[in-house]
Image (cartoon, rainbow, N blue to C red; front, top):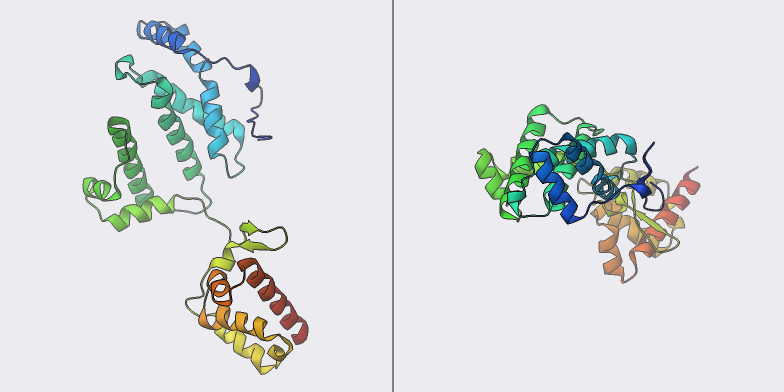
Length: 258
C-alpha cells in the first residue's frame, strides 16, 4: 500500500470499472435468469469495493494479493446470495460479507495461538452479530449474544478479545516532536515488580546522583506503581516531561552503576 492506494499484482486498479445502480440491477436480473456472463460482469464491476475495504483493514503488512483474493471470495458470496427484493444497495449488503471474509483470514493467521473451542465460540458470536445487523440494521448486545449461545458474557468477551491482534509494548502512542511515549509507559506496575530492582539501586547510593524530581518519579513509578499520566497530573507537568525525566534518571543510574 502506498499513498493510501492499494496495489495488486497484475491488476490495474485505476482502470477497474464501477457499475451504476441501473447497471447492477440489470445484471442481477440477467444472472438470476441464468446468464453466467452477467455474474462475471458483476464481479469485475465491484472489485473496487473490495479494494476500498482493504485500505481500512490491512494493518499488519499482510500480502495484499492474498487479501484481495480473500476479499473477492466474500464478494462472490455476496453476489450469489443477493436478492433484489432486499431493497437495499448491493454495497450495503456486500461490505459485511467481504469484511467478514477478510477478518476471518486475518484471525486464522494470527501470531498468537488460540484454542479451537475459544475460536469457535468467537466465530459463532460474530456470525450472530452479522446476521442480527443484516436483519435489524443495528448492533446486538454482548448480553444477547451470550444468551443465544447459552454462555456467560465473560466467555463471549474473552473469545472476541482473543481474536484481536497483539500490540507490542514498544508501540508508540504519542509523540510531541521530541519524546515518544510507548505502550509500556502506560502500564501500571500492580505487582510492584520494580521494588526489588529499586532497592538494589538504593544500596549502591546511585539515587543520590539524581534530582529530587527524578527520584520522586522513579519512586512513584516503581514503588507505588503509578502510570506516567497519573504522575504528570500530580506534578502538574506533561506526560512527555515525565517520560523524559524518567528515561534520563534511568540512564544516569545505569551510568553510575557501571
